[in-house]
Image (cartoon, rainbow, N blue to C red; front, top):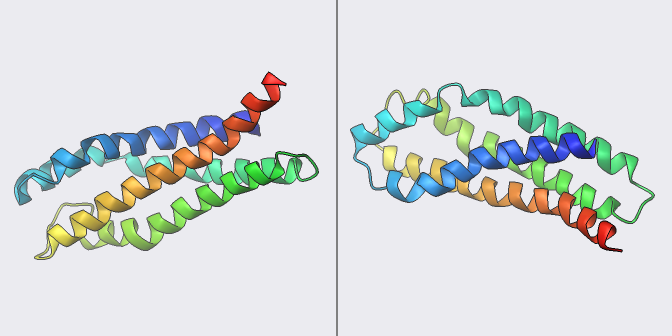
Length: 144
């Protein structure tokens, strides 16, 4: 389960890192430029499969290690992944629905853009923390 968790979280974190690195420049785009650029995310919904794999594998890892010293770290990693999914469904998914995945931009598109971009940035940070929670105990175990 550990390898599955680390790989799935790493891939989803990587996609979030792309959002993080491009956010500054995207926030400066005009309405039409932003609408066009957002189309690069077509098909990215498939990352939801990896997010679910990360959630399930990290939960199973926490259950498997419940009597071991690194259970807390594994469980907190699971909580991080769960938090990212909650943020996605509370803040990001509704924006995708309102904008039909950025095909249309309503009058409040700038507020929606801000909500969408910031939520992705927050999720990226949380995924990174979740990944560290899995990796740091490995490093500390191997150095002992």
